Length: 46
Image (cartoon, rainbow, N blue to C red; front, top):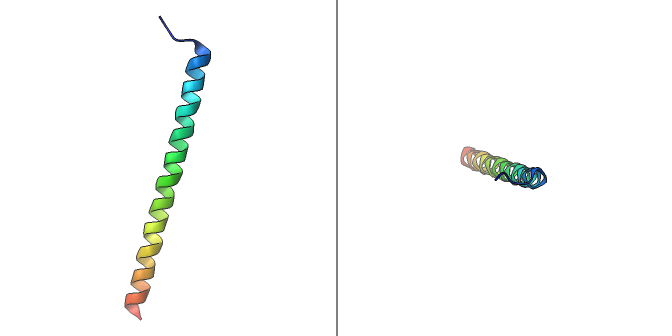
């Protein structure tokens, strides 16, 4: 038995939404770590 096509579409949309949210969170984390690193380097240079 194959699941209902509408159900499959709903599952795919939810997975895509979760993937996009996770990518944004990871990107924000990378930017935050980069900014902290730059701030530490600037403090160490003064």
